[in-house]
Each structure stands twice: as C-alpha cells, then as structure tokens.
Image 1 (cartoon, rainbow, N blue to C red):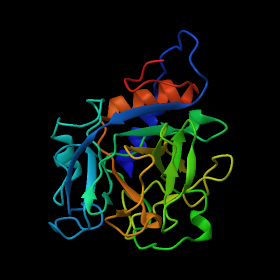
Image 2 (cartoon, rainbow, N blue to C red):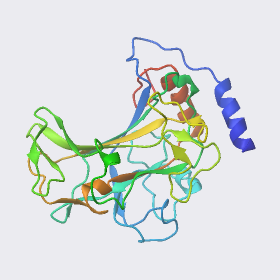
Image 3 (tube, rainbow, N blue to C red):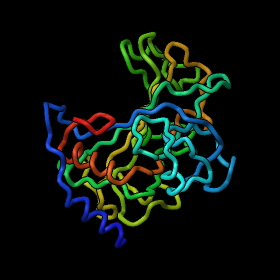
Length: 277
C-alpha cells in the first residue's frame, strides 16, 4: 500500500505535455494488435496449470502462457502490438467456424475515461489482472443485452445465422465484438478470487463507488473478424456467443502508461498508439 501511495503521489505531481495542433477532444489512446499465438492456458484463472483452460487466442506479449507473471511479462520485449512499451498480455476465447480457427483480422485495445473530469484517472498498478465477461454464460441474459457480436461497415447486418446467435453481415461489413472492462479499482488488490471483485464499473458519469474509489482507464477490446456474409457454423472455445470474455494482465512500462494517462486522458484529447496528439 505504501508503494502504491508513493506511486500515486508521484503521478499526480507530474505535468502533462502541452497539447499542440487541433486534436479530437476525446480522452483516449489505443494499442493496435495482431494475433500472437494460441494455447490452452490462462495465467489469471489457472496460473501454473499448463493446458487447464479452453483454447485462447493471445495478442500482445508473445510469451504469455500458464506460467506468466508480471516479472516474466516485463522481461519479454516481444509483442504482437504496435507499442513496444506495452508488455501486457491480452487474450480471448478462440473463435471457430465448422471446427476451423478463425483469427481476428485485428484487435484494437482502447484506453479511455468516462469521467466528467478525466484528470482524476490513475494508471493501472503494475501487475493488475482482470476479466470481463463470463465463460460460463451460455444463454442470453438481461445484463448481456447490447453486448453481442455485430456487423461494422456499410450495409451492416442482413440477417441472423441459423442458430440465431450471430449476425450475417453485408459483403461490405465485417463481424465485430467489443468487450469492455470495469474502470474502478479498490486500491488494494491486483486480483481477486473471481478476477472481477477488486474492480467495479463507474456509474453513468464514470464516477466510482466508495468501495472501489480509484478511477483507472476504461479498457475495451474491439475485435474484428474476417467474416461477413458467411457466419454460419461459428462457435467459441468457451461455448456460445454469450460466453465471450476477455482477460487483461497489465505489464505496461510505468512511465509510458503514466505519460499517456496524463497527456491524453487528463487533457481530454485523442492520441494515437504512440501517445501523440
């Protein structure tokens, strides 16, 4: 706790880089990623247990496996994303079509702030781990409404698959899924038994509850698959489309994440992957 308090004090003592040009006034930066590898590991849910999970599609740190720790991720410079200072591990369940792996064409990881005053946002603590979604959810539930696969692009969706679980996209559109993580931290724990309880979602203004008082960047994975008109026969390694979930194991270089949080989020400007306006 003392180390985190010192880190927080040092962060808020920093001054952001002056905004230049005429950037879009949205508190956001991003990391663009390609797929790195697949395995049946999950260092958050089943640390140290090789092959104990359903198959995952990994992006970011190329070393991520069942034995990954914050220290091992930070010690690896190989990444499938376009930011060398981000050593984080990111993963999702593997998507299949008629038993064949369909890798995302690209994944963009967006870091933003939903706060009315985004200058209150703090960087993630080193080694924070969290999961969004639930691999055990196999049927639609009210809290999952609006959190489904959709078609992005001209023409949008033209119908549903035979099982009704996926949209059929126009030839000019593609299958997309967004997964958003909680953006309030309890200020104490880097993980929790369910990998969610140490985090909470802010209210409609982004304000955090007293139980989780630390606002951190709102992380979203936007996953684009090279599928459009033919989306029949699709499933996830975790089951139906409703089991979609995502894992984030923070291993950013402290200074790089702090700079982007200050320059982009605090000043309410949209930055590119390198943190530039």
